[in-house]
View 1 (cartoon, rainbow, N blue to C red):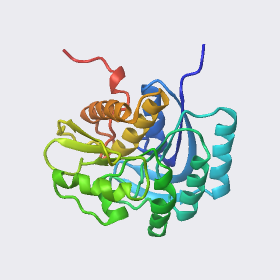
View 2: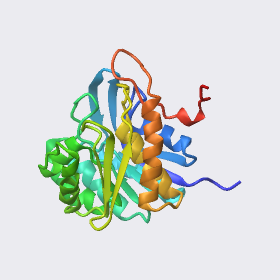
View 3: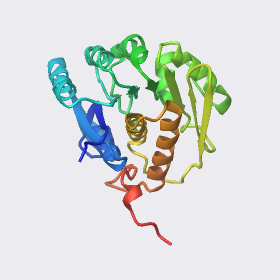
View 4: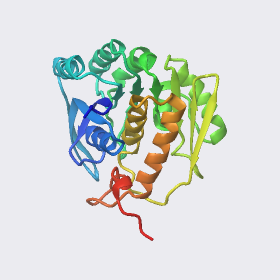
Length: 266
């Protein structure tokens, strides 16, 4: 039996299992690819927030990456929490030398508002990481953090996309989930636009949404889909995961990465 497509996540660990590499690997399993991981940071995290975070040394991150890529190989790479400028620059160098599409989720803060990226690392994200991205997937807070553009309505999404594209990613997916109304995202490479809409589900348990979406895009790219095809399929998957999100602990629960495996009622 041949191995499934291989996808590597380079991200932080979420001890609560809702986001980070745990969410990434669950997503990859659900979508039929072989998930692998490079841990960049360890967090003490639960449904209420992040109680602590410790980044790994650059040499540990580099060793994990080379160990996987040089032996097993990858068909796509996804980056998440990178914590510091040193880690951002090391990871940017590693993915630039890898012949595979790269999905960059420029994680700045957690779902609970806890900082996951040092302010000093923002310039490295702009100048080193975004230029090597096949797809960048910022939410509106991350757009504001990276570009200064603040989006308050759907018609401002193209302006946000142009500001991020100026840093060099091939494609950008601006996630409009923080707006009111339907969940509207804009995917563009600067010449063509794809608007993706989904109903907004009345469910507060959405921890891990960004990680899950970026990992789903990487999984679909590893299967050979085009960027627009991969993003559309990933949007469908994460919409179902949000609808099925469940309470866990005393705060915000996770999306349900395994919703496609559950028997449907009725």
